[in-house]
Every structure is written in structure tokens, then in C-alpha cells.
Length: 138
Image 1 (tube, helix red, strand yellow):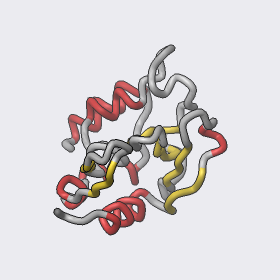
Image 2 (spheres, one colour):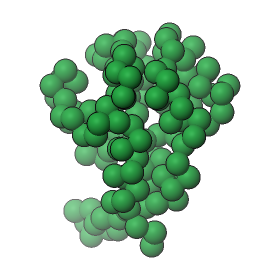
Image 3 (cartoon, rainbow, N blue to C red):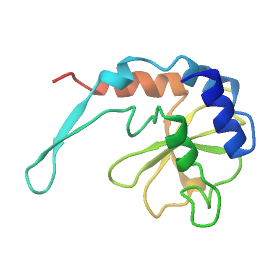
Image 4 (cartoon, rainbow, N blue to C red):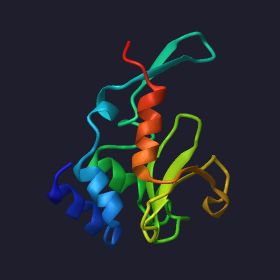
């Protein structure tokens, strides 16, 4: 992601990203784009996912869509300081508090209020390391 991408995100959400979030996206770990994990769905099909496509979206337009706070938008129910990073295939949503200097990562499941989220990692960098560690390269 480039500085203009980050500025585009900030303009869309109406506030600055935290330093930790900004630095993370400007130095996005390449391993998140290439690491994949696979699983079988209910019909026996093998599904392959990449963290850059799901849990830690690496697209400025994708992040803008995830953080759309307009009525009916993905983040219409989120508070201004809550920034969605990505979502999993089962409805789980990963986010950070833009007012948190460490950028701890939280997760809530479909139908759950974001204010009752689970803590996932103490920082965005730690979350990335966990995702990379859980993936293989088939």
C-alpha cells in the first residue's frame, strides 16, 4: 500500500489512521500476500484463503468498503475509532481501535456487538505474525 492509498482511506473514513496502523499498511508483510491456508467446506471442496484477502485486507478500496459507516454499510454500527481490518468466511470481523497506540486486534462474530469483542492479539504486528505462522504454502 502506498501513502496515497493511506490518505484515500483516511479521507473515506473521516479521520487519521493511528501511527501503528499506518506503518503496518505502508510496510505490509509480503508473507501475508503469499501465505495460504486451506480447509474443506461442507461439500468436500477444498477452499484456499490468503490473509491479505480476508483477515488483514490489503486493498485500500477493500478497507474503505469494510469501513463504510453510511446506513446499510458494513460498518454502519461501528464507532468512529473502530477500524475494520478484515473479515473471515464465517462472519467474524477483525478490527483495531484507532485510539489505541499499540493497535491491539479484536474480533467479533456475526450478530455480536463490536463492543463485546474478543481480544485476538496485543498489536497488529503480532496478529500478522500469528496469521503467517498458521499458514502454509501448498
